[in-house]
Image (cartoon, rainbow, N blue to C red; front, side, top):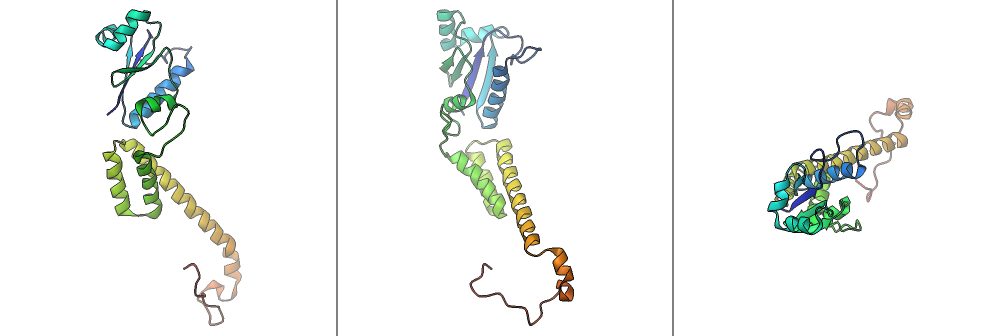
Length: 204
């Protein structure tokens, strides 16, 4: 599992989003880090004002502090290696640093095994395939996807399937309005011999 650690400059709390004058970048960062956690990344934030000894005990951060006196904070480590300093990266950059979802710093996405499984989950819901759903839930977990992310993919599939059902029902109502059927001979009941049969080669 990838470990991403944020070494923050001195702040009043662990996230810096308390009080009335909140930096929007810190708000975005908190949301981005929660997103990474949901994708299986181990995330930790360390505040200089609250945990100064953590800055001393990490060799790369101690060397940075000795060199700049903390001017290059925040610093971000991935698996013990500094990958960013002096600013808070955007989500796409954090994704690239943590090697999640194949997202690089420009926002381009590679279809990874994780993404393929999420797509397959939605397709399984759309096809109402029980064996497919069981298989892809297990495969998604094996790839490190959290249950929250898996659940989100399933809910998206359910939403698309429900919309499709509504749309086809609406089309049926347009093609054969209930009022027209009720006013038709026999009240739209059983077929008579005069009604045409379904031709060979039709859709069903």
